[in-house]
Length: 396
Image 1 (tube, rainbow, N blue to C red):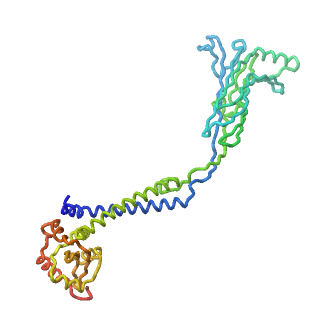
Image 2: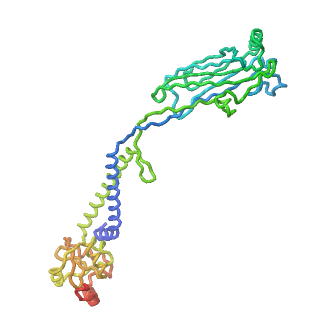
């Protein structure tokens, strides 16, 4: 790409690059502030949170019955027990660990499945059907209850005591366990009972809703649930609210530093590019900055007289004066310097900058035809503008 095309490209894209430079500087500043603010905050915080846990159980019992009683040949859950038809009933209870907290470690415990016959006067007879250790998040008990020996218990009791009106056949589970949950000591225990009432000789009806862990819920009768919560102290990353988002302090440090470095690198690169282009072709930079108000003129003897009494200002100042007074910005290059001026009735405002020797001709190559050096037209337009401006010092 030759010099002429470089100048044309520079003039067309200078606004874009200056905008990108401003954005990069803003990103770098915001990232630096975010990173610095995150450094002032502790990265972690200690919080105490409840960690809920639960042990959920499930009852089940069954027995073989004739097809006339059940199509499946098995006693359905919740059905009454009748000794002539179901002399042997198998009871099972399974439990599992649930909840947000993981299962306890170093878990130790014991679970029992038992059956008890008692009356309303306090007499009772009990035996343990099964017993298992609790060493993991799941455990199960299963045993068969023979109703014939239970009938023998009743006969032995009635030989000694008067007959009772209410007999209860209880099948229950009791358990207790201990271990370490989230590094802290943990222990729990529970019990669940199936309550069968004797309605007639050899006939026991299950009473759902009495004596269970939740008497108001039949579902809780078949699936008892023991719950609790352990207060656990944890060290977690500190969070900070940034508008609608919550960001951790470590993330603020990482992304703030990345934004600062990336934005700073881009800003330095763009600033260096703009500085080099401005030093190489300052007249193109001036024309691009001043926009349509810039008019290229040929230097001449008049320039020395204007510069002798002119007021020095910046390119931004010239652009502001041109917009305020509606005057053109005259741009020329003489003696290796770039000169831009706005001539007002009371004074001329001038901006000067070193200019490469080939600037006038190179700049002329990038000018549109109507902006090529036309000193006579520029002077006529300048005189016309002066005539329209009031010479009253107060107005000036």
